Length: 193
Image 1 (cartoon, rainbow, N blue to C red):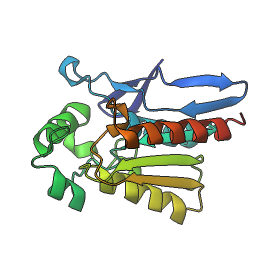
Image 2: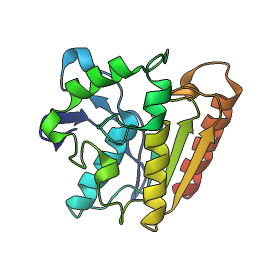
Image 3: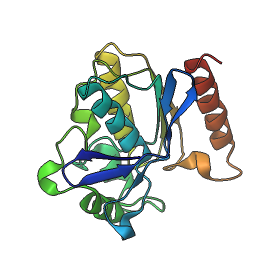
Image 4: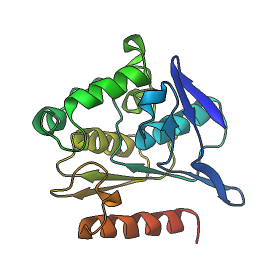
């Protein structure tokens, strides 16, 4: 399934699955299809945008959302990006700017379907936000979790000190293994299992 999130933003949705009858969970496996060279995972961003798109269409949102090291604001204007981005070995400022330029046009950076932090989160599903303590996107995840909390939504924020972007996919990192166990526990609980 392919969904148009905002002008110039097209996302394939292999991660939005019916896991339990009547319950869906949006995960972090969505991929940008805007440019061939930009096949970079934007899972946290796209997962949040899919939730907002479903809510805007008055469709049933997922039972829960998993936002792993999410990029929630295309402005690229945060303390964590300024602090960690210039020399980050996983996701530096230059590549982030390039990804953003491939993902969405400048005039649409503030569109809530491209920058979910700018959206109305009052009907957002229960959410787990996982962030790494040295991730340039740390502030994006923390701000999104706080905005969900301010909107009265159920949200759990897990921050892992000293961890980079997408640390949970690197083999042999204890914090990554703990994060994966926590993500699984959240998903089981959210899906009633």
